[in-house]
Image 1 (cartoon, rainbow, N blue to C red):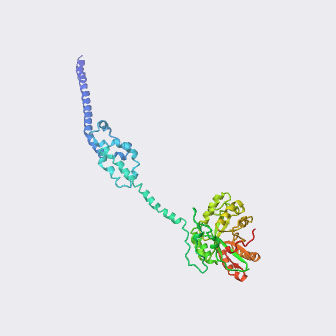
Image 2 (spheres, rainbow, N blue to C red):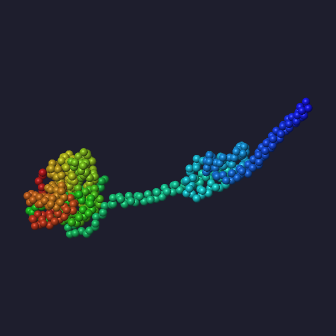
Image 3 (cartoon, helix red, strand yellow):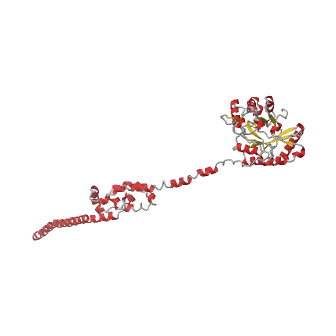
Length: 450
């Protein structure tokens, strides 16, 4: 019994001490927790300025690349996001909406001012001061138009090469003094009729006809055979035309294309050298359009009025010629309906007609005789199919033979250098052969119809 009474007070004392021990431990734990909280609150303001001081600009880095916050300061940062006014350093965070502009800095890489602007504190102070970044981006783009004027400036001189590449104006005929065989200057004003197309030849009040007034005077040949040579298609090549005018004897008749440039100057120069002059009259060939006769040619398909208008245009281009010779016309000259108004116009204006005989069935000669138009007929083309010395010499020999048989013959050649050279050499031999070289007007109406 005595032992039980002695142990009871010791158990009671242990039971009484245990709650106090637990309370003390809880107090110590709570005190430590409070101390940790107090230390975290007091140390967090020191960490935030340090992080803000070393944080890079918001617009140069995406939000995902920012460092993770300290778990001890997460509650404090949440409090700051609810109250941003006390911390102006955190205001650039809304500018992260401009992160799509991040690819644009390469445009500013060449601008020395673009690298310094992101470091200024003014842009971090308020979003309003970040607006100059857009004008600065526009300034960075302003060099882009500068290469455009640089590209346009070399393009501006481009018209000059075009002018240089354009067809140069035709050379002016050389001016030479008149020789002893020079013909009278043309035109004779009494033989000119004004018209909408230009000055046209006409028969004057005294009955003088242009084909007789503008003709080269022919020497009396008696009974000797006469040969007339026509060099056709002149005026298109200045070198060939000058070679024909200056290199051939004055008895050679020269025919000029009506659409040639400086045609009046060329004809004046030819007459000054003693040459009688014809005008080429372009006419439709059978192989048109493969063979083009030239501008304003006469066509069977055109109305008589339109062909007459084209004929008058050609006649008004120049003065001082004795008549016309058809250029091509293998289809046109076989049509009576087409030739009738042409020959009537030539007769009314006192001009002669040379039938080039581009078609064997040509009716031009017969119609000219019927209408009493002065006419002549070509006997041979010197260089129509082949241009060579042998060919030209052979054709000239044939012309000689025709002249001996009929008393008169005519040949037509073109202004090829070999043709000019062979005619010149051949003409020097005629006096020894008893043949006379004459202009075409000297053989008018001396050939039988064919």
